[in-house]
Length: 366
Image (cartoon, rainbow, N blue to C red; front, side, top):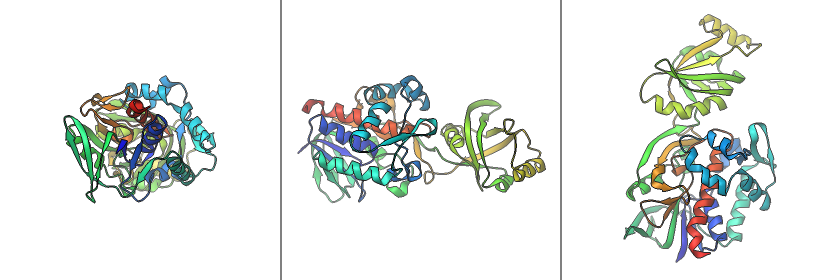
């Protein structure tokens, strides 16, 4: 029997397992795929944007949705500074780039996965792959055991659920953890794709495909009221818009689209030289200077980097990541209703909540 069973071998699960074992617990890590950290390999386009070197925690939490206050304690325990030091300590040299984005010097997510895998074995963490959880048995308000698809029963004193979200389902991130949480009595906030390209209604946008603009101001309006704005790089595609500034705005737009039409305003005034092809298209459509386009939707979870929504924050103790419903259950990572901007913020939330959940769950065994 194990002290702690961690369900999910993504960033949050890996960090939870390492944190727990270093606090003195005997740990089992369950991963339903044949390898750990599948989705992780896509981070930073494979270059692995590990974290964001924003060391001022007040400024750091501003890069997240309504979860800012909830995350503050986790960041104070294990924030960007601790994260970078952790990776350096296990042999991953890091570097900072534009907007404080932190990458491994090797620029390889595979390298990071290999080193984290070695850390699991070095710390005597039992790893079971192809472990698909089918049922969770609760007795007296505690999980007594979990049952896998092969009917194997797993028993532990405490459990940490970090199964990720629904973004990039081809990597195994299909949202099955939400169903488990609901069966255990937790409520799930609406699940929407976030950090995802935007689909535009206007057909002429296709003529701008491939054009990219830097440091552009864009704003989102609904019912003539400004709802959000960003400044950054944008890319025109055959279906609409992408690029960091657009992806960040998509986090807000998912909810807005459920209530009505959404307009996007792009400010071209700062541009000294508009690409000729773009100038011709905009002139033809009478869209010079500030131009307006209509958002007709978002690309789905298949193209989304993260999931907006998840387990309600009010049902989780922010100081420990412990469930307020099930006595021996903890949560970490994307399964929680937290999401941040591009630039390493979402991985940072995984490392921080994972570390705190592992430490909290293992406290009894230290």
